[in-house]
Image (cartoon, rainbow, N blue to C red; front, side, top):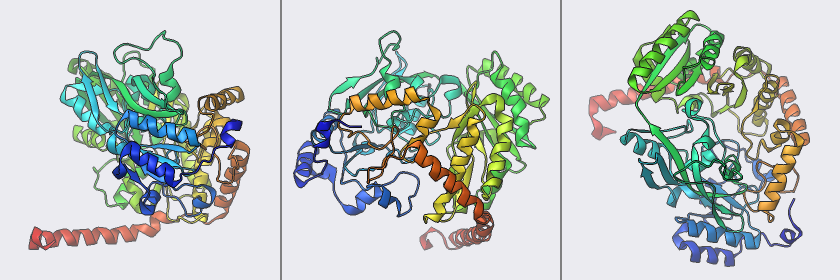
Length: 536
């Protein structure tokens, strides 16, 4: 819903607008190349060509600001003319969160706004520009003996504001809270170009009125553009990953629930990977440790003497539940590889995760639901990976393969719809909205809450320029709202079609191909050894 004034705006990126953008940013930071604009038309997930029919997903222009003032000036110009603004970090997500739906101006925040502004060891905080890579600030903190509370599993490439905009769950969150819990302050450009601060750099945000940190965290860029972030940091101590093997994945349910109910055990991170995951890695030619069935990875952190006590208690819990402790080198390897769960996508054109949360008490039951989902949807079994988000919440990320980028191939997404529906039965829900799953907002929140969110969006962004068509309402280029009723019909249709199609055979079809590829790689390595590097 937009104002009457907004209905009269041109919403077009004209040559005059391009000239004004060049005056604000400099000509080198304004890109109208068709090829480059196509590269910005999707995020991590590949899109079928038919997506261009439903969405105007190629931006009219890509701009690369380097200062807060430049961002504010661009947004002010867009506001005046009703032009869509799409903030973009590294686009490591896969739900279309940074995908344009109404063309417009795409703000690439990762190019010129990626610096660490200040690491304050006295007040235990770090201030960065919004496009700063998580891996960069994690390294900076570790050099000073400090620890970033939580971060995305895609930390080597994901940007700070991108993850905060989804209010994500990731490593470290079990102990230190989710993305928003570690935000002290943000600088945000509102839809009319006004710049505000949401909190305080050096003290807590308690008892200071409405919590604006929480308002903009998880907003997916629909309320404003995050340009700077101040995060809490913590004394690092030591980080000790521990790995435990289980014959069956469900057997982890008992120790997981004992850990979350333990009065003094507070791991940094709790995660798991099933036997299919390790088998798929082998199919993809990825060398892994032998003798792993289903792996529970528990990472401890803190003062060494306390970590030792936690390890002893953890060993006891796991042993009583039938788990076997693996060598430290296995645990270290899995911790180091925590951001590479989906390298197995080599088996098909891509692997796609279905992210859902359920109550921890139902962890073992939901394992069965994940395996049943593969069978019901006739999927070639991917892996079941996930992590414990907090003492009550488990995040499952079962993934599957698809080898077909046509419209028919997109029915593979039926798995996501199906598993999201099953999660509701266990006190849970699907995670993430973007443009593709914006309709889920009405499913996972009660009606008055969603109406309030939409009213807030309209009030703060009356011209509907801030990432329009996302989160609070997915919308096609024809003005059709992708509401829950419509997407519910589409989801049911996709599930019905998927059940009628033959059983997927992606893994079987690709096994021989990747065996061949692996042999070719070995031959190439052999030639390198025989003839030396000069013959590469």
